[in-house]
Amino acid sequence: MKEKQKIILNSTILYVIAFLLTTIIHEFGHAIIGLINGGEPILHHNYVEYLNIDNLRISQKITISLAGPVLSLIQGILIGLIFIKIQKQSLFKLFLLWLSVLGLSNFFGYLMTGPIFQKGDIGKVFFLTNTPLILQIIIAVIGTAILFYIAYKLTLPFLEFCNKKECISDAKLRENFAFGIIIIPWIAGAIIVTILYLPVIAIVSIIYPITSGMIFIFPWKNAKRITNLKISKVNNIGEYSFGLYLIFIISLVVFKYILAPGIIL
Image (cartoon, rainbow, N blue to C red; front, side, top):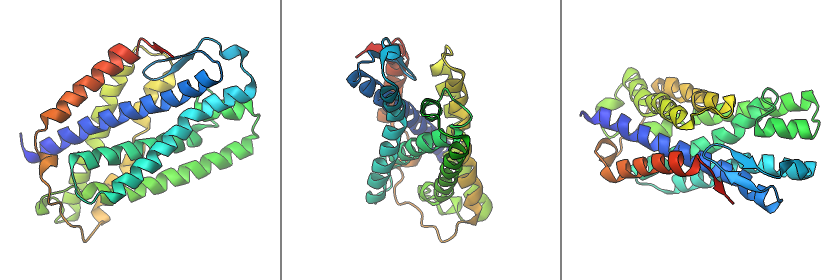
């Protein structure tokens, strides 16, 4: 397998692991706050079931709904800060990049779609608090603007994982490298995650894996405008990593066969 194909493979696997972990962290946020409030939660792979949700106060339901997105925001910020502090390029640093980006896109994506999907976390909050539509739209616009700004800034961090000068020597090559390390992982990862999400519990959970990555179109197309890039001195991004592949397999098994049936907290 050529080095570029190995980069695509490794980035795709890292994307899937980061996506699954982001989902678990998000749902755990709902579940732990649900447990504290007496909701009797059952944690599943991509949703939380509550045995006592109807008996909770509206304020408790709001807190539970906010817990997932807020934890995703904390994930995105904290992991992003760790990513910035690490100087050496590596598969682990690429994993941190994906984990930070997915946490941030999860939070701001919920803000963006709040007025449209009332069954989504932020949509529930809007409904339970009777938030005026105009305020919902303002919040959605702010969330969209921030998400697009984050997407715009992603180009350079991804391109800096290139370890061959020929990958970034002209605009077309930079765009091709960005497509391989960003877009293919998103598309292939969305297919894998969607299969893991089956059977369908909520239609949003099936739509989300593909729609959540649409922001990656911006850093991909922006790649040709980036100049003065320095190539990475680390080659492991384009090498086989059997440890990574083992973690990938374990993640799939845990997600599908342990979390999907549900864990009573």
